Image (cartoon, rainbow, N blue to C red; front, side):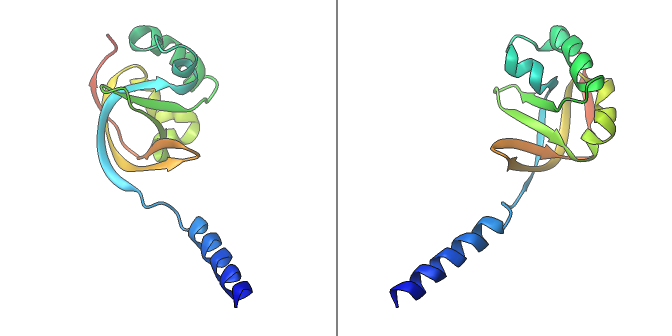
Length: 123
């Protein structure tokens, strides 16, 4: 009986790990940044961050992120990140609004979306 319970618990754990975490649709506003630039130097935002983002997000294809006013950081995925982040190039360093599914991916909050609404250029 003990072996049966242990086996059942193991199977339940494996099945539970395979079920994806449900994504919640959210609308977020923040600055489009280069994750690599920001994580190496938190002052790389605004115009300074836009220059670094151009080099890393556009030219090298590094992941872009969204930094909200309250300091939360999200990786941008989905259609916005397709083709080497092509849809994000015009808004690097800008304040934008993105509506999409938010879920953790490899421990980082990620917003998956296809469209972005530009609000303001870099300060």
